[in-house]
Length: 294
Image 1 (cartoon, rainbow, N blue to C red):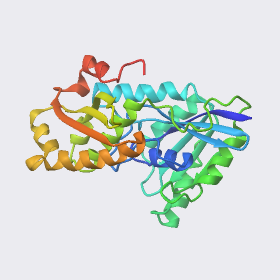
Image 2: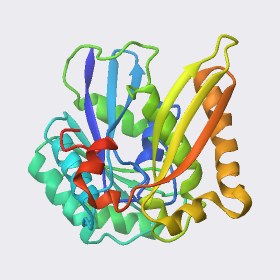
Image 3: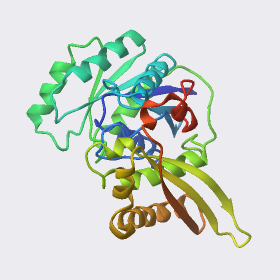
């Protein structure tokens, strides 16, 4: 069979996670309008007749302002060195800029077969999409695809193109497995997703979720205990909301999705905790799972 690992890369907020979910056919990574939503490498698996494609969703490459940002960029660079194919996503609705050129340079150095995907064609004028394709064609890549991750337009053709260049190899995952994320990681990300688009300015970047407990009671009810971590006391009040409104709303939405994921009723307990400047503190990053070795 044909099989291999495919890195999905690009600058923040070009739709990488939405594209991965669309290609896999189910939700394996959270999405948000906020840049830098993805903070680790997430593998989603496409199973097909005679092929298996392992997609590696990566954080958006950017100019880092914190230790966390530096570690996330290093994570992407390490991923590029280990995959069989690269999918390089750009935004049809935004001019190609320095961030895209940075990614193009890194991908070129990686040397893997590369598919340039012009995403969000459903939101762009035809002239914008054509312009992006023409400009992107100056890069030394062979494959170019206009797609809409949101509607699915062009995605099947993209998958077929990727399969065509994959090497012969084994099935890396069982047929019923669409992601290799640990349960605690998935739970934490679902909770974090419910806060992202409700928070303004830099606060979404200052928020991380740490799951402390997932345990089942004799009656089947599952207790999930998690800390919602921010960097300053002033952020704590915003995340909680007036009278606990925001915390309650995000928690209720997360609980619904967690019950689908875990297949049982969930009792979700959230606590907002301040870990001062965690994005800039190596020891805290290690404790929160953003170690240099990830």
